[in-house]
Length: 160
Image (cartoon, rainbow, N blue to C red; front, side, top):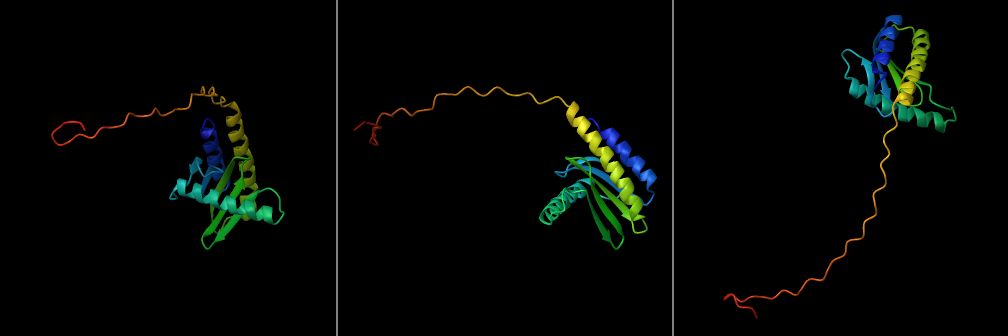
């Protein structure tokens, strides 16, 4: 991805602005890692779990008439996992300690999500379109030709 360095730079700036963050990950909505700064956490696994949680959050928001997905917050015994929309094709997942200021987490997470969404979309727009293959020429259907009848041979090698 052309914007990977810029997205990673945004994740580093975000972690500098919110010291209670212990990790930050940008992923595609399909669960592929775009950029990550998640020491001690497997980024591919976190991206896959984020995609699964995103799927449930999208269905929940839709089923309850709450509109498009914006964010998801999980508060565990040892801290927070927050996921923010980052444009139509990416998400930002943040890991924070239990003492994190949730208001600040939301403010900075939303800002970074917007910025990452812009970076991902501009990279997608600047990518050259894939070459379109010409349709294959139709080929004549294969037909079978009748085979000649086989002749059985006797153990002596003579034909019947």
